[in-house]
Image (cartoon, rainbow, N blue to C red; front, top):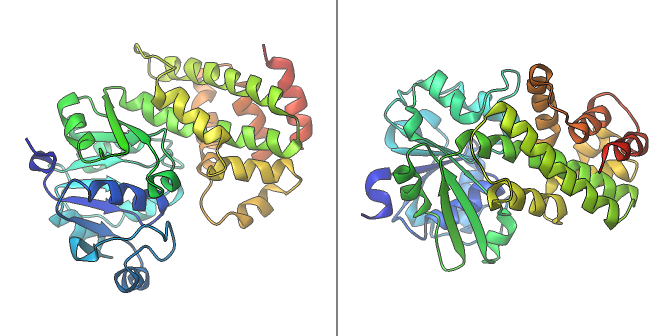
Length: 334
């Protein structure tokens, strides 16, 4: 069975770097895609230039194979599979415009965040608010930086779905000469891990900015993966191997890579930027800023021991100086 026989027409919903990287991968395996971008001027520039005018500008597309639209309902009506790649802070603003019946659609979340305010996972939000069947609600995660996909470097993705056959179908849309995709049924774990690794990447960036050193960074990351495991076991108990690439691998690449916007955001704070100034300096959304609050809110009832999360939250939302917060944090490490 070909990758697109079950999935039908695929729509990429979002115009950022991650959306662009995934569109590149998908177009290696399907004849054409629909691509939703909210700005008509961005679409016109894309058509004229043959590449995304704002993100991953070195990735050239055959625009004859792309059906662009700024009408989200038109896209939802004509597509069979919706790949959601909006930043989580703006997710509700986009989806609140949708009045098309999505109950028979396949929905794939590549949103590395939680719905703000309600603190819902993206797949849960689509299930509860749009009637999407749980067996047709998928998630795709790393370890994978959009920039390295653009450079054709070897990359690895995980596609999660309760129906592993469905997960395999979408995974086939992402494979290529230098890209690999595996499957998992741990949808909730993958989504929460994608949020947490961004929070921990901010912590890693703060350590870098404070010039605390590689030794401290190593102990931070080793404690972070244990903290992630404790939270996942509490919020979504099930067998999982925390050293699998979708958990530990994604944490490592986000915590260490120069491509990580969350690491860079944290580094600015460690170097002395205020949180407000660092946010203004960022050209793209640092999802971990929002994730720190969402996970803190969720953990208020779970009461999992999460000292790294607490330290990042104290810096981002309580105004605690980074040096003080991380000096206190060091006392919790082993």
